[in-house]
Amino acid sequence: MTTIAAARMEWIKLRSLRSTWWTLAVTVAGTVGIGLAVGLNSKDAAADLTNNALAGVVPGLLLTGVLGVLTMTSEYSSGTIRATLAVVPRRGVVLAAKAAVFGVVTLIVGEVAAFTAFLAAATTVRHGITAPALSDPGVLRAVMLSGAAFCLIGLLGLGLGAIIRHSAAAVGVLVAGVYVVVQVIGFFAHSAAAYMPILILENSLSTTRPVTCGASCPDFLSAWAGLGMLSLYAVIALVAGGWLLARRDA
Amino acid sequence: MIEAQNLTRRYGRTVAVDSLSFDVRPGSVTGFLGPNGSGKSTTMRLILGLDRPDAGQVRVGGRRYRELRWPLREVGAMLEAKAFHPGRSARSHLAALAAGNAIPRTRVDEVLDLVGLTSAAGRRAGKFSLGMGQRLGVAAALLGDPAVLLLDEPVNGLDPEGVRWIRNLLTSLAAQGRTVFVSSHLISEMALTAERLVVIGRGRLLANTTVAELSAGAASLEAAFFRLTGDSVEYAAKETTS
Image: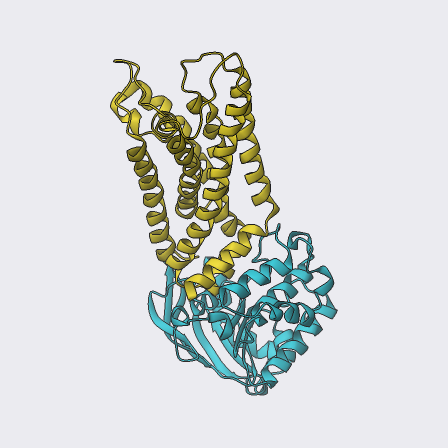
C-alpha cells in the first residue's frame, strides 16, 4: 500500500512538470525525424534499413538519460527531497517508486519513438528499395529493443542522479559514460568495446542481422545479451543510488 | 508528543547536537530557542529522520519517524521556506504529497483555502514571494491534519501581517490539542507566541521551561535568554556550523 502511494506521488511529480513533456516530445520528434530522413535518402538496397531507420535512437537516448538524472537531482537543488522523504521515510521505497514510474513512462515513449521512426523510414523509402516490414526476420525485435533502450538509459540516469545528486556533474558522468568513453575504449581495449552502451545499441539491439566487419570489429553481443547488459548497468546505478540514499543525510 | 533522549549528532569534529533530551507536550506552543548555529535545525532534521543521530533517539507519538506508516497524518513539518520545485504549481506539489500518504485529494483544496493560496494554486511555485512560499510550506505541514507540527523559523522574512497570521495559526492549532514545536531565534516573537520553551546552546539543553518562569527572574524574556545563552554565543561565533 505504501509503495503504491509512493508511486502515485512520483507520477504526479513527474507529470506536473512541463519540462517532462517537452523533453519526451523532443525525444520522439528527433528520433522520428531522423528515421524519416533515413527513409527519404536511402539508396543502398543491401543495407540494414531497419538499423539505419533507428539511427535517431542514439541522440534520443541522451534526452531520456538527462531527464532521468534531473528527475532525481532537481529534488536536491529545489529542496523537494526533504518533503519527499518526510512523506516516505523508507528511502529504498522512494527510489523504487521513482524508477518504476519513470521506467514505465520512458518505456512507452521509447517504444512510440522507435516504432514511429521505423514506420517513417519504411513508408518513405524510394529509389526502388524494398521497404522492410515488422514481419521480416529480426525487425520487430530490433525496433522493440531499441525502444527499450530509452527506458534503460533513462534509469541509468536516474541512478546516477541518486549517486551524484548534482545536476551538472551527473549529466557529465552520464554523457561521458554513454558517449565519450566508447571513443577511448575503441582505440585501446577493443574487446571491451562490445560492452559500451552506444555500441550495444547500434550493433546488438537495433540490428536485424549480426554485425560483421572482419578483424577490425570485436565480437558484438547478441540482441538479448545486449539488452541484459544495458539492464545490468541501470540496475547497478539504481542499487548503488538506493544504498547511498538510505545512508546519507538528506 | 515529541520525546528526545540523549540525542547526539556530530558533523566531522563539530558536535551539532550534544546529548539532548527534552519532551514537547501537546496543547501548547513550545518555542525552540537558541543562537544561530546552536543545533535547532539539526534537531528538527533528526526528529524527521532526515539526518541520523550518532547516539540517542527521538520519538514522535511514541514511535520513530521512520516507523510511521503514513507520516504526514501524524507529523506535519516545515523545515525550509522553499522545499518545492519552482516549475510545479502549488496544487500539484500538495497533490503529490497527499497521494504519497493516501490523503484524500479534497484535502489539498482545503489547506490551500486555509493558507489563502486558492487563487495562486495553479501558478508555478517558483514565482511565489517568500511569504507565499511560507504559506505553501504551512499548507504542506497541515495536509495530513497531524497531531504534531514542527516549524523551523516560520516567520523568517514575513511581513507584519504574515507574522501575525502565523502567530494566530500556531496558537489556534495548539488550542485544538496539537503538539506545536516552533524554532526561532526571535525572542520577542516567541514571547508573544509560545507558552513553553526549549532553549539550547552549543547543541546542549539550557532550559526546558515556560515563558513565564524563564522571564520571572529577569527584566524581560530577552534578558533571561541572554543570561542563559551568553556562553554559547561566544562559542558559536568562533565555531559555527550552519
